[in-house]
Length: 331
Image 1 (cartoon, one colour):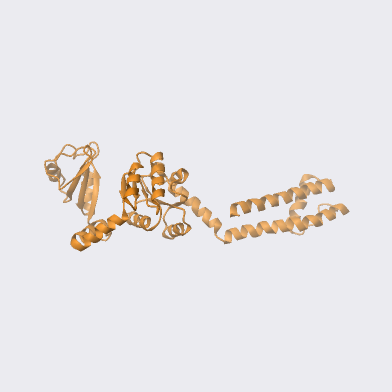
Image 2 (tube, rainbow, N blue to C red):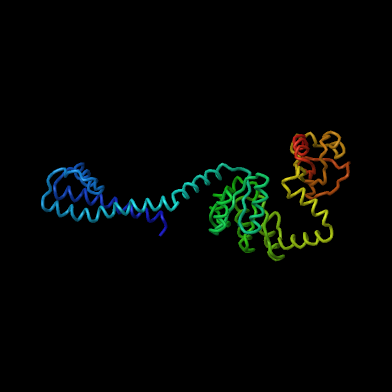
């Protein structure tokens, strides 16, 4: 029996004992409600005050029986509440309530479904960049690790609509489905897209068949850790310095060099300019490595200078944090 049910039953039993004491004294001794309640309370609490009035023989027998039942119930209530507090359940429930309030205030955060090896790496990367996220998992060990690391989390199955809502899916900026099961990742993707068709979803797949099903389930991107791992190993063999540089830029928080994507918004000073004109105007020192055209929905690497910049295009930029900040404010 869980603690909530146990405490409710003990409180109900204690309330029943009070009702028994009051009704018994009112019926046997013909006392008023207040006198009977007073006598019941001092008897249960064992404070030792004198009786309100002298008791009849029947009243004394009733009080003897009442003490045996009532005091035992009162002590059970006290010990149950004490055990609940000492065992940390009260602290845990207060912590869950506080965490729920924190999640309710998030907007534009990311949801990580599954806190296995892949999910933990995603969380580590987001945490390193100080980006808000919420973890969903049902495994007690995973949730305990989230608690230890200070990550916001929700307990439950990630394909459950209510669990996704508790994680703030209606306000989220994106979702990662990194559960160990391919089938469950499909369910998570379907549930997430059913609640938010516009939500950007990245899903993990362990096979080509699963990748195909996840794409049919409307996942925006499907990642295979085994495929990525194989390509990375081959890259380390063939082009170790290139891979080292990419790691330095993308994953090393100690360097002041980053690759970032910036969307060209409406009324941007870059809208309508060519890349050459934009470079002359910005003078920030940041390098535009690629551009993703909104209309064609494709990335153009090393774009030529005469390509025009339009609203909704994404610029892939390399530079220091200061350069990226200056260029971002211009765009």
